[in-house]
Length: 152
Image: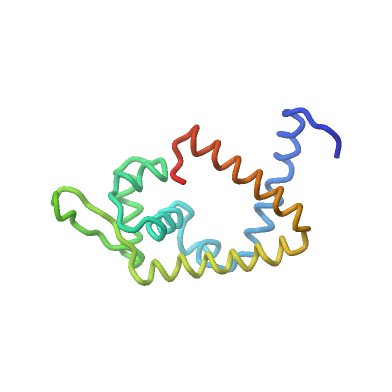
C-alpha cells in the first residue's frame, strides 16, 4: 500500500472496519454478543470492575447519557443481578452502583473470551505488526480521551 492522503485513509478504513467488527463479533460467544446484555451495560460493568463503586452521575458521564437514562440502564442490571445500588454513607441522596459477584464474573468471562479471540487472531500477525498496531491504537485512545473527555 502506497502513501495515502487522509481522505483516502478514511475511505479505506470505512471499507475495512465493518468487516473487522463483524469478524470479531462472529467469534464472540459471550453474553454481550448473544444479546443478554447491551454494549452500554457492558461498558458500565467494565468500568465498575476497573474502578469499583461509582456514582450514577459518573456512569452517565462515561456512557454519555443523561442520569435518568443511566437510572433505567442500571435498573435492568439490578434486575439481572449484575449490580446493586448502595446509598452513599455521607449523603443519602447520592446513589452509588456496585458490581455483584455475578456481574464481576460476567466481566471476567467476557474479557477472557475476548483475550482468547485476540490471541488466536493476532497470533497470525508478526510481532512487529502487533507492536505497530498497538502503538497506533494507544495513540488514538489518547487522542479520544483528551478531545472527548473519555475515561481512560
